[in-house]
Picture 1: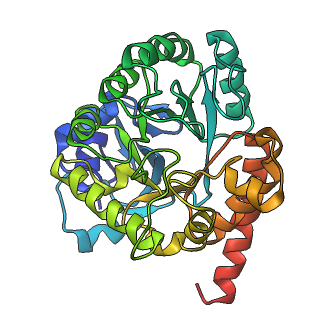
Picture 2 (picture 1 turned 180 degrees about the vertical axis):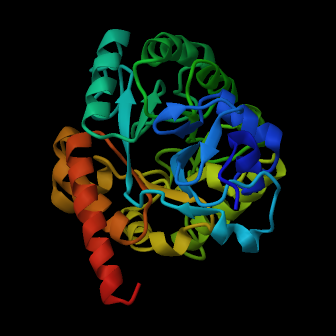
Length: 358
């Protein structure tokens, strides 16, 4: 049993990356840390070190048990590392930099204000900051959307200001592949694709940058509600399967994908609630699932609250149910409430698992 190894060789040998060159690139691009410090490909690891690997939206952590430099079969990995990845639900904090978002439009559309709010959310425990420069409020459509040029003009000054100040991964909410490219060039690590298409064009950009890809189900635009002949959950699961195949065809691993059932997008009130109930059924093997119910209309319908900014208690209820049903990520405006409720839901989930023999 070896006591030390080059980290790029170990990452390849331990089958964490498919090739040594991909492992080396991950080290060079700040996606691999030991002791909280970014490490170069030549860094020497030792037994007992914990290697953290960012495969957005999740950071995986591996305790080194054997410092191998020759690739082994998957069945032998039990002696190579121990997966010590935290099991806590990730909180994605929403940073809308638009003048017209449905609950907080205009509050953070100046770069300095956006930076201050991002830093606040990070301090409160957000695991991801999701920047939105295009409103997808109720009633919005592709026809009413701002152009890619306008979206880029909003994004660039904010992303450049966040760079170096925000240490958690930055996600950008967009449906334009050209805006995704801009975002990744300016420091984003995840594309939150709200197009509902999972297109080859978007996949090419994500693959080129080795980014994370959040893919949302949205078949008919923000307000249209189709009839789901086989039920909304089956339709969502079918879409996730198709999207996963597109990603695979472009070399994007399942671990870099996160699926979003699109609460509030092309869904009826009952559809939204059924999706929360069925989260465990629509999860895709090897990929994360995000529940993004924050301040959505479904909460207003259930509670009678017409002011979206006052729907945070209802958001906590839906996100707690989502976590207990298997969600890996929750996307929220109010990060303080989201983090606290997620930790309580995680604790409950653990106890429920013990009760059920899990």
